[in-house]
Length: 180
Image 1 (cartoon, rainbow, N blue to C red):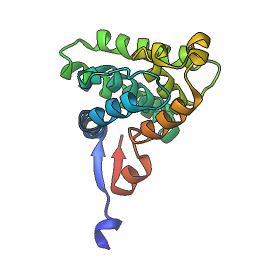
Image 2 (image 1 turned 90 degrees about the vertical axis):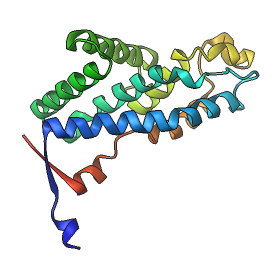
Image 3 (image 1 turned 90 degrees about the horizontal axis):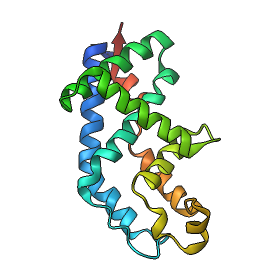
Image 4 (image 1 turned 30 degrees about the horizontal axis):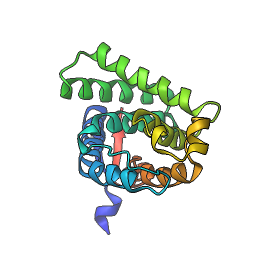
């Protein structure tokens, strides 16, 4: 009981570490299942054969989606500070400089927005981004293939999958307090 009342305090650097490491771990551990689910999805008349080594594209979509939710849980200046720390940590992991990795994230963010237009629903945008980044259109039945749009049933199933890759802010704030 007492453990629930005392929250561990994190500065933004440690919070960014927890965030980055958690996203990397969940993506690394979960992408094999995601690619298998896509490959076996009944929306496709032929298996897309998404390789399990394609996890980097998926990770970038997951990162962009989660970064979009920062401002829902922090003040704008706090969200910017955390966002910057996260980009710094990821750039180091990918052996890139900050500006280059930030551009990769901006490009993926723009891609998610473009394929999701006019919707502003981030989860839906992440699912559509997976569909387009993995070039799944050619594996659909002719009706959706000719329209160049994802089968809505596939998107619904993909939304359910993508929810597992969204940061659980409620659980985080129940355990930690972030010091700015």
